[in-house]
Image 1 (tube, rainbow, N blue to C red):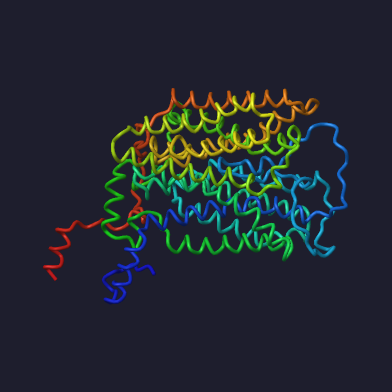
Image 2 (tube, rainbow, N blue to C red):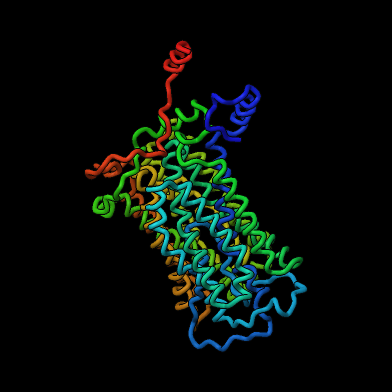
Length: 525
């Protein structure tokens, strides 16, 4: 329970509030809800990819294709740097049999199906950069919370939209992508005002909780479809998302200064640690010239783009390689399907905790920490792709190599992923929005590359070329960041305000009184 005026509480209420504070700090509540939020973000994004297998009539056949098709579903599923596994098409995904009524099926062929699935991306890519900037202006809590809230409501009406009209479903998916596109960059401004610099690596690992969503969403949704039919998937994910939204707006506040439950000790700890690096009055404009001419910014953007291209090529094309070359269907083995993503989250969390520990102890500078963990997270998969060139003919070797590649890649959370908070916390949402907008095309490019190389010749030699390109991509991304990356606060982070009428920022909250002033005030009473 939250109180806005502690002086009006009874002794019992104060005792209860103190017990609540002892159990969980406000930052811990923020961490928990952020982690759950990214798990649900994944579920809201890909629930249709899972359910559509049970939605489309099994007797509908697609016309023959004469050219390699770029599955537009890849774009929707690959629109973020988060983990995702659902690049399955309607011809390969296996779901338990259902007792669906004939009216629950839709006569869509593969072209229409991919059109529906890919429509998510059309809205998603539009709000990455604007969403990050909007979060800097009005607060990340509002942008992240509202994107999830409206996405949940849209998910709940998805079955109705599908039954009304094929076009109506596409419209719902476009708007859903529009809403969720703003969620990823919005979390950076939240961290800028809530998380001390020495704890930000661990907080950024919450973004990789989508990996847990990858391991949970598929089997849970498959079970619900087998019992209650495909609409249950949308009611489940939308309902849970709506519940999460209520919790988010109830327990999370824009800044420590406006939080009614936060203790004076925790608030002082956060504000002293952040200092002046994050402005209390948000900058009214972005210094675009300084931002675009900044080497550390481009280090993040380029590294993120190359890293995402390599990551999603591994995720998307692994099942195809295993099926075409090794004749091994990895998707039918739940352990092989979920293990890499569970491992990635474990690596993300453990490496981030270790990075924060090194920073707190003063063992490494911020720049050195970011470069070391980025190098590990990207050079390791690069070396593993070189090994795959020579050892990839064996299923056991391939599964092991790809699992280790995804596992080590999780360390990016301790490297470049949250680096925008180091160099320009006031514009961290804009930086990540820019990087994520460009990297969203990584899935499209990886699909095109593999299709072009293996369309006429599906031999192992062609796949060796793919693995060689992947190795070069990973290694190049590490080199770019090692040369251009930085952990130093940039001078343009606090640009001078243009002349304008002074406006009181309601989110600054009341000034935190020191202990001496509290004693004097009580003595006067």
